[in-house]
Length: 130
Image (cartoon, rainbow, N blue to C red; front, side):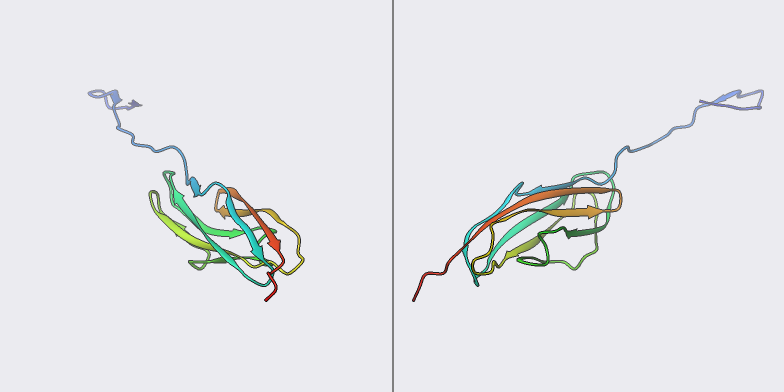
């Protein structure tokens, strides 16, 4: 109710419509497991990003310490905007070096006003001799 100086209508009812909350990104699967991958070879796994929130996720991008070396992101070019209810799929590629260390890190998913992450795991193994 809003007070008014109108003597015929001192209180005025004003309808208000509001939505609380912002963008919320759900990730599937909750953990990306590449398994054992021979050094010099590669494995790919899909990652689905879905906006289950009430606002558009603006400038969505993926990164973190695990990305850029043995892990690369294939998919829509970042940054992207993801409206409520929309989803997109990216492919994660793991290409370990021969004799490298196990992959144990997180992929960061960032957008204006929010962030989440998904754990990554993989094991580099020696390629079978020919």
